[in-house]
Image 1 (cartoon, rainbow, N blue to C red):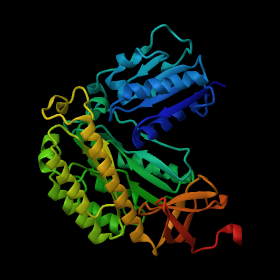
Image 2 (cartoon, rainbow, N blue to C red; image 1 turned 60 degrees about the vertical axis):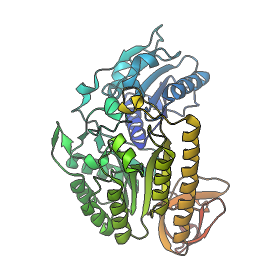
Image 3 (cartoon, rainbow, N blue to C red; image 1 turned 90 degrees about the horizontal axis):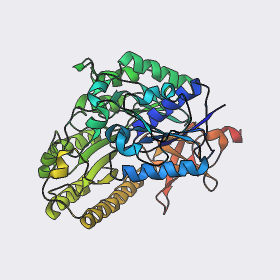
Image 4 (cartoon, rainbow, N blue to C red; image 1 turned 90 degrees about the vertical axis):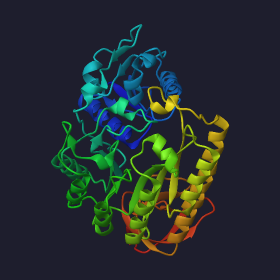
Length: 440
C-alpha cells in the first residue's frame, strides 16, 4: 500500500481542503500517514496571506525529503496558484497544482518517478471562478471545519486571495445540510463553518441565489450536531438578523470572529474595506447587548502603508476601548500584484514589529479580562483528545479554553462545569458539576 502524508500551512479552509484531498487518496488505495513516517507521496498545502510563503514551502519540502529521500512531492494551495513557476524551481518538488487542479491530484499523480523538472498543472484563476468544490475536515473527532464558500469579490488593496482563489462562489444549502448530517453521523459534536468570505455565502454561477442568514437558520435544525461556530465574518455582512438569531439559537454558539484590520478610518479607506469603524462599534454593541458573555475575536493589520504613529495609536485606543476578547495581529507584508505594494508611506520593519508587539500585549490583556469575567459561572465544555502533563483541554461555547485532569472517558464529551480559577498561564481550571462515568 502506498503511503501519503500532508502538511498544511495557513487557514482553516486549507485544513478542510487537505482533509478532503486525503480522502481522495484513501479512496485510491493509499494509506494516510504522519508527516514523519517516510511517505511515498508528500502533499504540501500552501498559503499566500503573509510573506515568506516560499521560505516556508522550501523548509517543508526539505523536511519531507529528510524523512523519505525518494518521495514524490506535490505542492498545492494559494501560493501554488499564484507562483507555480517559482515553486517548480524549488529543489525536490515534483508537481505543482493550481486552484482547480488540486482536487484532481490523484489522477495527475500516476507515476511516482521523479523527473528532472517539476510538472505544473495550473490555469488562469478566471477559469476557476464558477466552480465550487466542497470540503470538510475529519480526523479531529471533536470538531470539523466545513467549507461552504470559496473565493472573494472584495478588492482589498493588501490581499492576494481573489488572485489565488478567484471570485465568490458557494455550495447550495441542501448540499451543506447533507454534509452536516454526514458529519453528525460520524460522531463529531461541533462544526466550524469556513469560507474565504463566509458572510457572502449564496453566490452560484455569478448570481446571488441565497443569503448566509438562510444557511444559518437551516443549519440550526440539523439533529446530531451540538454546536456550530462561525469562523470569521466581515462586519458589513454580519447583519442584526444574524446576531439576533444566534442569541436565541439552539446550536450556534456565542462566539464571533470579526475582521477589523484597522481602527483608523483613513487606513480603512486606503485598504478599500467596506465599512468605517463606527459600524464596527455598532456590531460589538449589538452582540454584547444580546449576549453579554459572547466572545469576540478581531483581526488587525499593523504597519500598512501610510499608517503613521498617530493612526496606529488611534487603532490601539479604539481596540482598548472595545468590549472584545482577543486579537489576531498580522504584520503587513508586501504582496506582489496588490495595490498596497506600490503605495507611498512604507512603514519600517522595526516599527511594524513594535506595533505588532504592542497589540499582542493588548490581546493578552483582553483575553485575561474576558476569562476573568467568566470565573464563577457555569458552562458546558467540549473536551478535546489531547493530553499534556496529565491534563486535557476543552472549550466552552463562548470559546474559553479550560483545563481538567485527563480522563479518556471525557474525550469528545460535553460536560457541565464551573469555571473556578484563572491560572498564571492564563488557563481556566474547572470543577465538575456532573459525575463522569469513571466515578459511577
